[in-house]
Amino acid sequence: MKKIAISLGDPNGIGIEIALKAHDEIKQFCKPLYFINKALLQRAAKLLECRIPDDFITCECGKDFELKPGKFSKKAGKFSFVSFANAFLNVKNHKADALVTLPINKQAWAKAGIKYHGHTEALSDFCKRDAIMMLGCEELFVGLFTDHQPLKSVPKSVKKKALARFLLSFAKASGFDKIGVLGLNPHAGDGGILGREDEKIVKAIKIANKVLGARVFSGPLVPDVAFNPLALKRTNRLVAMYHDQALAPLKALYFDSAINVSLALPIIRTSPDHGTAFDIAYKGFANITSYINAVKYAVIQANNKKQSK
Image (cartoon, rainbow, N blue to C red; front, side, top):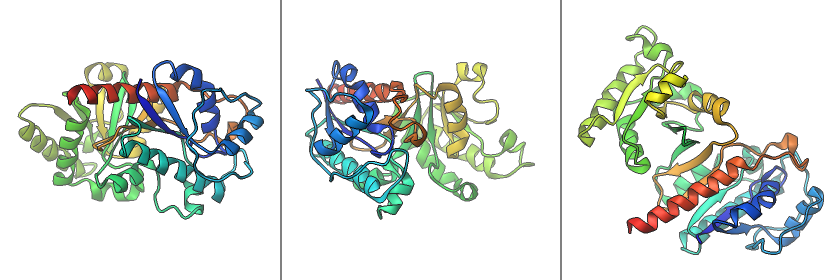
């Protein structure tokens, strides 16, 4: 079975609860390696009033400290980064086949002096590649042209050559052959009346399709109708110009089942498509569906990677 390196995320959130609750299921199709020290794991299990499985394999990292459920802290931020960095190195050094990351808190990372805004940015730096953030499930996958970027800066980022390069990278990394590209403005600009950025999107699509020698990309699609049931029957693989353009409708439709995938990297990385859920931390309510889907997707990709060699 494939070995999956799992970083536990912010220990004041729902990550450890999810890992413990889902262990018996995911061990049926992979060998999970959990990056946490035993003392901290025991603290979390005590708060959750649950037993740690005998075959719950831990890879010691980070320090023990008092947990504060539902609150962000410097110590929790540092631990979540150390857990993530160690799990990444395990995969990079071929000791595991894929990386699955549980949710971190960006404020906690900042408080701990971590320079990255999240996993994707860190992985881009670690691997010296431009990672692509893709989220979704079999019913709908969406790639993000810009991800954790302030909305006010997005229009300036929509440039013909940069978007064309992104589209080509997304097509190669995802393997999708039919992809819709969302416009930036309402009604995809309405012929320039509501903004000129969409004209650049048209040109980028033409460049990408010409390089690919096929009409892989279509659009720009009108964003407010691209996610309705009829539209998704035609095209359920999309590229969005910015974070919430994609994730607001995606999470409304598939919140429990969607996952996060990092594309265009030399390693396989997935995660649940949700945050630390501080409001329900250590209350026993955490849903494990997205996490299990993330692990399954990682295993499938690891198997596909081996077969392609």
